[in-house]
Length: 105
Image 1 (cartoon, rainbow, N blue to C red):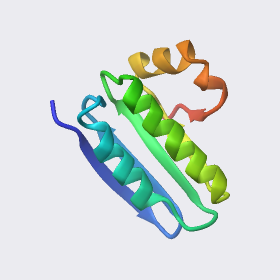
Image 2: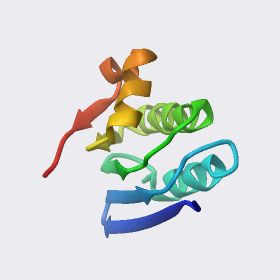
Image 3: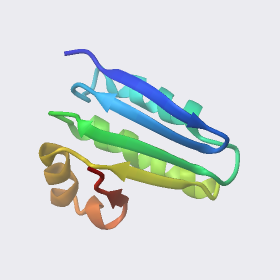
């Protein structure tokens, strides 16, 4: 299953809706989308993860890189409604206490 990334919003508040598996092969696409969505300073980037059935360590590393870049730019970095499998990976790595995670209906 290929990775689909839809970008919504503008003016410093961007949401990336991600669907598909995030693994060694597709994580560079996610990294690129996060980088392009990141404002120079301030604003927010949200990554909607409800459509991700599988994420490996390269996907987690991509999210951590996005988080670090956001912190450097004083930008909010938010994970929206991670799927159960993604949430489990974040909990096992204890990153669920680092990221801002919001569940939306």
